Length: 205
Ligand SMILES: C[S@@+](CC[C@H](N)C(=O)[O-])C[C@H]1O[C@@H](n2cnc3c(N)ncnc32)[C@H](O)[C@@H]1O
Image (cartoon, rainbow, N blue to C red; front, side, top):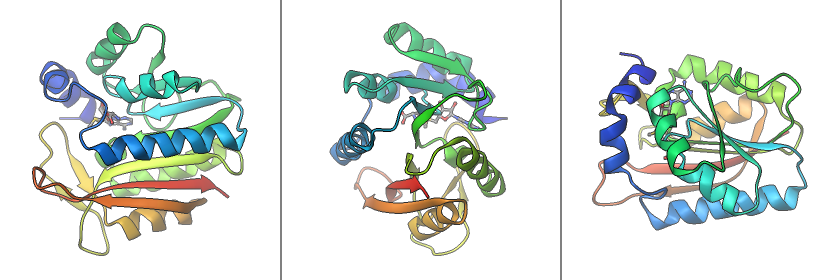
């Protein structure tokens, strides 16, 4: 089952299980810091929420004064997003950004728990596309389930779709290799969840 099929099938359950943007307070702080970074960078254009799901974070960023488009391959997830946030732009598409017309100015990219559904080889290709479509200094925030094991990402039994979790150093390394320099990272753990998680802010060199 592809991630799109999985999220289409599970969207109702997902929306019920995850009714708000942030599962842990630190996630709100990370997005706040990202928004402030974008607003102070003077980057022109849209903030792209890659794998926006039910749209909560795209809506939060919009309320902070950013011009946001949420992109997701799952029509069912987008259905929730569009119905809850009619004032926010959403488009069907994936992390390859083909949903955005060529020449679209991208002010920033945020990808929370969506790159996890892309195989590590395809993540490299995705980051090359992002580097080609962004200007120097464009902020990029990636959030993912993490691993304490250095080296290659580990597949894990995500409830909806195939997924990989990344050691924070490896995530930073592949971002760096593809043109995105780390600014900060937050690694956090909660006793209610089985894996550590990471929020990693970079900018395009
Ligand atoms: C765990 S949800 C996260 C939703 C949202 N980013 C959030 O933080 O609440 C993962 C989302 O990634 C999307 N997704 C899966 N594969 C994707 C891909 N190749 N490109 C972009 N998004 C993808 C799914 O459809 C789903 O909506």
